[in-house]
Length: 254
Ligand code: ATP
Image 1 (cartoon, rainbow, N blue to C red):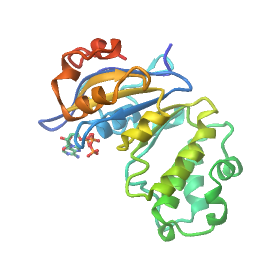
Image 2: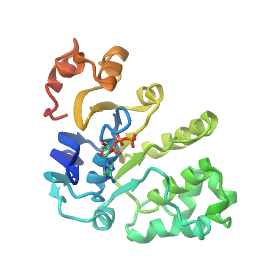
Image 3: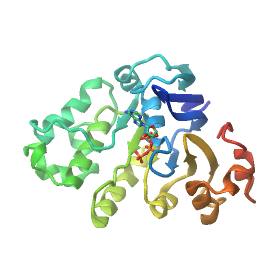
Image 4: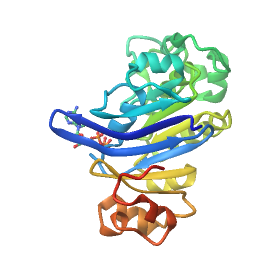
């Protein structure tokens, strides 16, 4: 049984179809990366998985339970946690207080203030600082730490590196490595393709709301991915790899 399963997700904003007929699975301990151009539907799909956006149709199952109708805070209590694009910290609270808000899910587990600051050492000297005084990289570390405080089984990371300097991004990804070793499943939206290929177990490429290509970094070529990214025909009509062929016309399940 997959940790998280989405079936035939269709998500809209009024008449705008943001996600069309996307199915995917996430296993325990797996890092699944969603890639695609701006507006491809990645953030919307993450929000559907998190319960922050109700899909027009389709289902989301978590640990075998249909959670489609559960709101974000209810899914959070069960172990699904979204780190949204833009971090959304409480600016008037300290880092410590922001982290403790994350612990509000009341889920027990390995993560508490001590283990989170061990995993994200950049946070330790900042605990009493106001969140509004932090750099972008520090804020992102708080956002990830806050998510860990809820002891998630599934972490949904939306563009964690957006607007950060390369060296800060390196540090963030380095700190994610031991987090991954704890066995939680991660769905990552990341603009940097090279970095994605370096960290992902599996990749799903989205184009105009559809999942058009999927596979592992070892089985997909750069050409296949960039073609899928920019919408060239190869992704939609089958590349040379098995995964590309399996992707079909976007309704495939990976
Ligand atoms: P980005 O990298 O720019 O965040 P994305 O791949 O995450 O892109 P989404 O943000 O999910 O894509 O957007 C998918 C589609 O839904 C786009 O056409 C976008 O304009 C539209 N969309 C997203 N949010 C809203 C909204 N709040 N209201 C209306 N349309 C929206």
